[in-house]
Amino acid sequence: MLSSKLSVGIIGLPNVGKSTLFNALLKKQAAYAANFPFATIEPNIGIVPVPDERLARLAEVVKTSEKLDYLPPQVPATCEFVDIAGLIAGAHKGEGLGNKFLSHIRETDAICHVLRAFKDENIVKEGSVDPKADLEVVETELKLADLQTLERIKNAQKKGASENLHHKVSALTKLMDGLSKGIPARDVKLSDEERKASYEFHLLTAKPVLIVLNVDENDLVNVEKIESDYALEFGIPAGCVIGICAKVESELAALAENDQKEYLASLGITESGLEKLIRKAFNTLGLITFLTAGVKEARAWTIRNGTLAPQAAAAIHSDFENKFIKADVCDFDDFVRCGGWKMSREKGMVKIEGKDYVVKDGDVIEFKIGT
Image (cartoon, rainbow, N blue to C red; front, side, top):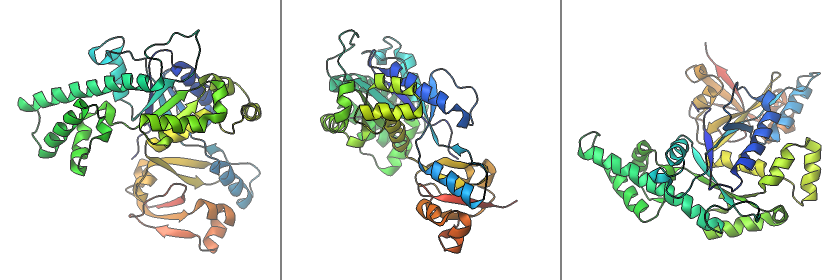
């Protein structure tokens, strides 16, 4: 079953805008807190909703089809962000808050680099003068920390402290060679067996990454070009780079929804940077959502891409996997167009799927569970 603790660590050099960005996320969390099935949340963790317009449409369909006099609550999928202390060169040797910094990153599932791309002479700049060089400082520290980790594992193997498994040894050798050449673990070519064995190493540079460029307010109107240009410069897919003005996001988070739309329009954009970040973070973690629609709620459930129906059912309740019988599945668009379960079934839009069905993003599902 999917852990509810999947998280994205926000990292970067000091004074790049991490805290401003994270505080905006916390405000977004507070605004949606009533929808969260969570209790107390640590101050350095923000659990925020994944934007999903489908939920409102599902709720309307249920209200109409079930002849309700109320709109069922909407419960979105969520993504967890962890604010991690600013890094400085030498972190792998314990400089600054190095050891604490690295241990916190190790506990997250993905890394979000925040890079300063704004100009403000009043804010002290740590490190270099351009985002690419800043990224290289942080990545270098993570690579050096990973090399130290692999060196310890290698020495332990020599002493017989660990099983000398073939795939583990070959993965270790390839990873050490790649990292020593400046290649992050995620880009080192490994066989499927070696990749699986390497999970035991818990390497920092094996984690998927997102790059947040903290840009000036005036740059937002051209943010897509800025994202594309920097992705090319960094040598990573364009979808992994998000241009955000942390200052604007902080101001947006304090406004009512209608006022937010007006403010965004005045800047020449239609979507906040935080919404893009949350959605892309969700995708970066390899997650999708299936939907349930009933009189109690319209809800998005989080699962990994490629999850089979019984394991998806376990996201609702752990007992459901073993008691799984079948799943009634309807495409979201068909479900809305038909107006709910009854008409979707009558028009043949609902498929009965068994244990081998791979759940797709946006499937509307009703599970049949045994006793």
